[in-house]
Image (spheres, one colour):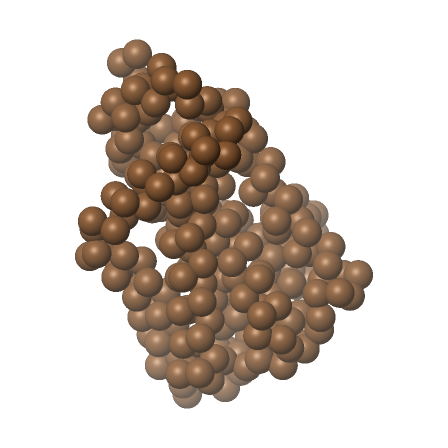
Length: 248
């Protein structure tokens, strides 16, 4: 890997994103719109928004960045862009990290906009540090980017990439405690949730925003470290499994 080649890939992707303002507006606005809808829906049901709001605040960037990353990566492969890069001096690691850097710039803005609106506009509870909550929301967006890059290697079309939503994404969200607290799940599902990275991400976000904890505490530090470590593993897996277009 070379920093110059990695940045060249990231710069090219960022230029493409800049030429598509409509998609950028949708990426930035969708989490805010969904949070508003959640707030209005549960206005007359005390405690629901306060309980699941912080977890959904992390869920939306995670899902959005997964979809954008996986679909974009597949489009690049099907258009032959990846083929051209892979026959150049640019290595697989440069491509994977370059794409990740570009989408993480977008994810940073998305996480900041979503968190700011959730706290300042919708009154989502925040008993801990703003920047620590932002770190976890951003880490979840990173997780979405890395998962999208890794799983895009196993899909041939954009439609197949979308099918990973019910197969891979939704089971993680359910097992992570969004709908039912993990402690109230059947024993078998509670055990399965231990292997779901989102469980630790949600627990860290809830610990900072609702419980007022700090990332320096042992539990929250471990949960945040897992949230950041899993994307690194996924990026490595994505680089190893990266292939050319299906016709190559």
